[in-house]
Amino acid sequence: MDIGEVSSGYDFERKVLGVASVDVSPKVKCFFRRKTKFRKAVKIVKDIQDILEWNPRSPSTEVAQMIYKNICVGLNKYSCKLCFFSALGTALDYRYGIDCFFTLEIGGRESIVTVDLSIRKKREQKADIVIAVDDIRSDNVYNISRQITKKLLARTYSHYSKNKSEKYKDKYVFKTSH
Image (cartoon, helix red, strand yellow):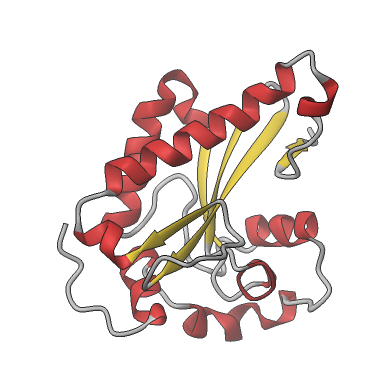
């Protein structure tokens, strides 16, 4: 896949998510809270997808569409429960280092896999998956999608385990409210 020349992290965000965090921040400034807890930050991001002009079930860029579609193929019958959220310019981005995330809801539980977009691989990472420019250029999109799919399914099915210590250790799995 050819994403062209990438000069900065913001430029890479534009190529993958259609906008950069600096473009988005003024729109979501009222939602940005310095002390926002992770769960609250996730909820805010879900609520403002219209403001970010992002459709969680139909990503607008070629790269995002390829990743989303590959994950849908990997999830098979659960693909209709997959959502891909952009978190650019929000507390998740600035405080937690998460540019976007995927959610999968099965059996009243929602699992989340977080993603950081970076111009190069990082030694320390806050997000579950780091997607670097080289990953996209080397057509590694399938492998990235496979990693995300595995993490989503592992987090989802860890709740059905009989081992309580395994069942409650993952902080990115929430009960959904209906």
